[in-house]
Image 1: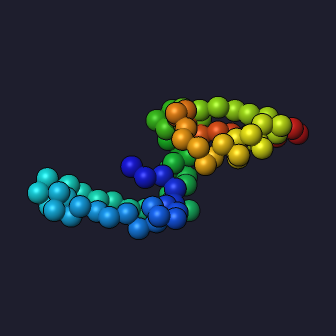
Image 2: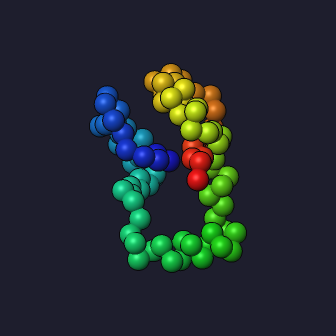
Image 3: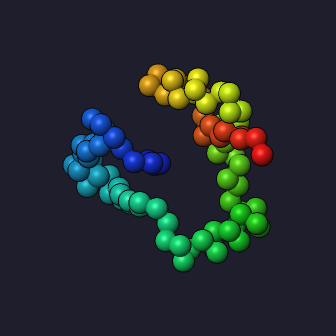
Length: 88
C-alpha cells in the first residue's frame, strides 16, 4: 500500500508487470476520496469499524515541529503519523 504522493526519484516507480501477470496480482490506485463517500466513512469511524487514532505514532507540541521537519530526510524506524498538537 502506498499512502501519499511519490516524489523525486520515486515519482515514477518501475512496476514489474511480468510478476503482476504471473502471480495474478491486482493493482489499485486512488488519489483521494470523493466527498460523497465521507458520510459513510464517518459512520464507520463512529461505529468503531475505522480507528484513525491507531495510525498516530506520536503526538508532539509546537516546539517539536522543527526537530521533526529536520529529521524527515533521515530514515525513520518509527511507525505511524506524527501529529502536532497546537495550543488553543
